[in-house]
Amino acid sequence: METILGLCVGIGLSAASGFRVFVPLLVMSVAALMGWFEPLKGFEWLAMPAVCLALTVATISEIAAYYVPWVDNLLDTVATPAAMIAGTLTTMAVSSGEMSQFASWASAIIVGGGTAGVVQMSTVAARGVSTATTGGVANPVISTGEWIGAAVLSVLSFIVPVLVVFVVLLTLIWATRWIRGKKKVVESST
Image 1 (cartoon, rainbow, N blue to C red):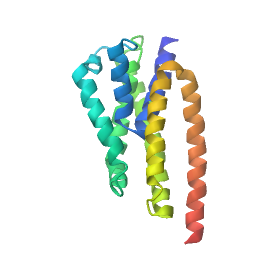
Image 2 (cartoon, rainbow, N blue to C red):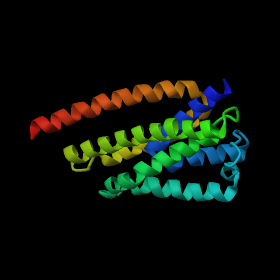
Image 3 (cartoon, helix red, strand yellow):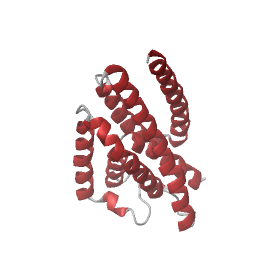
Image 4 (spheres, one colour):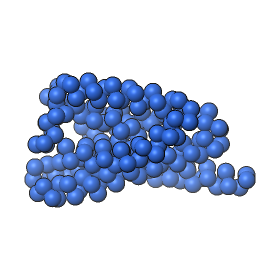
């Protein structure tokens, strides 16, 4: 049961990494410093105050950069692999000690990195549609939704991890349908 719960927390944190790379790591660091979460062996660095401070600066910088026109689209090229790495790390840090090292890393890469990658690609597509249809004017609205979603998902991953998995799945289904609908509208108008 502990393994499944750890994977649910990992999925939520990985999905949050797909929205913003540093937000879930910051939430994990704060939770570790407060004693609410104990990272797996090898990830104790999350509980260091200097790491928490560095993650705070990185989070603020990342959020601010997404409000700069055209920089947001540029960041997406770097953020996609970074989100997959962050998703893998967040999943690995909350994995249970019941699994072997190989199984833990394999599930972290597949589940964590995969979830973060899918969510990140959805945000890239949404930003692309927004840029194409509004010239980038609506991108700050998308950016605000992304960082709020990352923060809420990160916190809820620790509080109600199983519910977060269902919310992530439903959101991905909705986002996919919304993006496909917008792409059809853009294609039909050209």
